[in-house]
Length: 477
Image (spheres, rainbow, N blue to C red):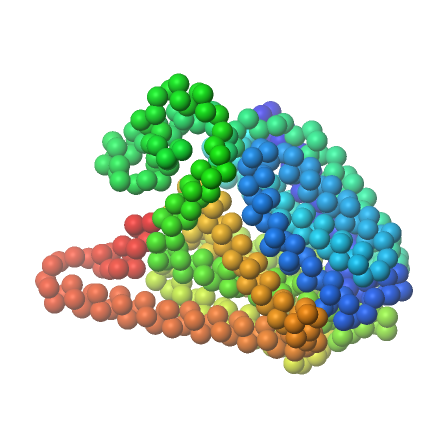
């Protein structure tokens, strides 16, 4: 029951909070008779607010999530979603919609609580299973919402306003679940218990027995001291870390993680590609609206979002079965598939055919889901749970920082304020630039490996190919 109860509540929350039938038709709703906003207002003045608020709130919410022990931030996220869709239903005017985007940015930033809460209430033996449940249910909820919205629009001929009402009702159901979650008794950075100190001491002792005492990951300092050498009275007396101690510990872990060159390469792709991915999916609906206006034609955005979500999940699932040695061919694979993503964006931009737009969008999302899954397990394979959260958080933050700069220059009316077709041309060039970076990185890696093997043969040292620099880098992480 200790595993079943919180997992069930999280799955209920994840499903209903992501079931949003109005989401694939948001641009059509804002530019339709219900809100009567112009394309420039929607694309250049309203949508960028989500990017800015997400970036500004991500790190504070990350710290608040740990300090408040997860559950209050889940409640905050649920509240933000209810406020968002209440405003979408009732509020009018551009300023109100900009405020709506701020609340949605708060809800998005708070997702860190959803994906980290479960690790604070279940044992590590259950991590893999409950992670699968929680992540898959959000994808299923998103797909179910998109399909429901499309079927209601195409078959029942409901108005877009009714889809917003259903989305608000789903958010209201989701709002109930977090209140019944058990309150965690431990957190990652700010709070500790004597049990956590014992765990760290055991890990440190185990590392010594394995002759890996130099691995600082097994004995993270607490208030600048080794936990294994601290007296028990100090552990029980000091129950929380100060903010400066937490920030110092995060910075030290950050430096140690990113010294690993393979991890740095995958993280670089993560940040660059996620930035471009967010831009494409955020502004795909305005592009489709220009190619096939919703007030003149029937649109099928819901089917496209459903198919792209399901194929993305399938692509992520198939990663484990691909016979690819990512440690050798990873950079070149990133190059080829990033180039494929660039081609998809150029097709959406230049050919101006709605069916090609839809097909390219589906292929684009599926390719990204496949690669981000590879990047995830390539990074996570060499990290414990603490650094998993840190590295993924830093990568996401860098992606948002890049996206904010791109939005400010290209999209925002305060910058260039370009039309959506010009924007997508720039995004296509952006993914081409990513492909070129990893093409050069791949050639450099292969050349370094070949040169290392030649040096080994010349020296007659008898070392195997596993001693080459790329592999030793990965093993040193």
